[in-house]
Amino acid sequence: MINVSKLKKGIVIDHIKSGNGHKIFSQLGLDKLEDTVVLLKNIPSNKMGIKDLIKIENDIYLDLTVLGLIDSGVTINIIENGQKKEKIKLELPRKVYGILKCKNPRCISTIEDVGDIEFTLINPSTKEYQCEYCHEKTKP
Amino acid sequence: MIKGKSLIEVNDFSLEEIDDLLSFAGKIIDSEKNYSSLCKGNLIATLFYEPSTRTKFSFESAILRLGGQVIGFADAMTSSVSKGESLIDTIRTISCYADLMIMRHPKEGAPKLASKYSSVPIINGGDGGHQHPTQTLTDLLTIRQLKGPISNFTIGLCGDLKFGRTTHSLTKILIKYPDINFVFISPEELQIPGYIKEEIANNRYQETFSLESCIDRLDILYMTRIQKERFFSEEEYLRLKDSYILDINLMKMAKNDMIVMHPLPRVNEIAVEVDRDDRAAYFKQAKYGMYIRMALISKILGKGEN
Image 1: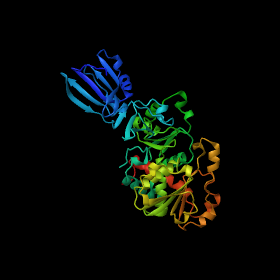
Image 2: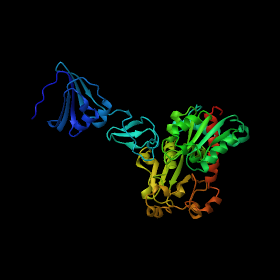
Image 3: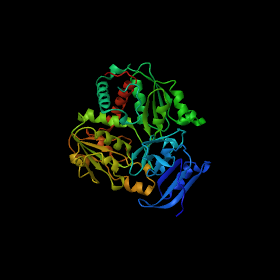
Image 4: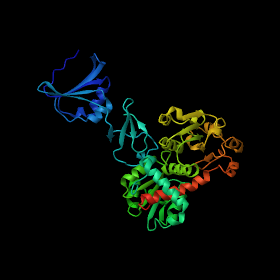
């Protein structure tokens, strides 16, 4: 087992479904940070079997909507002075703007620059969102 | 109050607002001449980005019968679209000139997008296979005029129930009215989608392949066309296109006061011989389409009675 030292100040993104760590890493643009960032893959987990985990040694802005869409099961721990200051449990956002694209070829958004499309969560268990224009369902 | 509101889908209006519209349309039917100047001085734009016969003519005749005036195009290639203008820019421009816009567009959601950028209300005259709210209002007015209050009847919807937007939209609104039973008559390949059935109580609907087996129980028979453009294979279309043909022999089995509705155009699903039967209501339905549009335009312009 590889050991990574405890954070003094920063963010731990835990309980990432194995395989999603890399997606979160790139979607949040962590490769562009100058701070220390660690991505651990396939760590043994009692709850999940194996999981991914990300540690960021600084307090940065996290787009929780993007995180929720990729993996709503993750937990986010905010660390200060080596202690857990806050734990954030993610939920799928009820509405998202500008992240999803409508895949329906008959939708007006495929031929017109409509700006950020509003997608509304219609089924949390299947993670299905509905396009505001054509009502077609899509998954992140 | 629907004054100043856009109509993109039928659910944009409450049941009370719809009933109010239906009542007003009924008054116009009773004394049309009294309303011939109601919208005098109003200019209404019709933006038809794809061909239409009934919808375009019924909207335009509705406007003219209210004393209003019409501008617009019936072919997008005669507008600035042919120069590459975006829909949003077209809408922003035309809303400078007209008091109300009526729009048909092949892309789903186009009228909704237009309503975001228009300074005047938009009426959706059909967006691809998505929504066609004035057809649903037409259907409700036809039922109300010919069968009385919208309650306590059995309606059979027959034909393409999978792709047919009119049957989906009509079913979804009728569910909100009391004591209505549905019989969905279709080939297995064209059955009504599960998400619509889920909204109806189990004891309120039945599915069958056979029109013959249920026609005697129906108060309303709503026929639809099997739409060629919805099929990927010609072979599949040819196999299903003649699934149902309503003829005088089937009509003999129906109740004496059953009405036959159809959103038109028909192909061969209703034999021409049925047109002579008093129960054939589909051309009356087309006329009611004009009256409900008269009521709708007046109310949105704030001219209708309360």
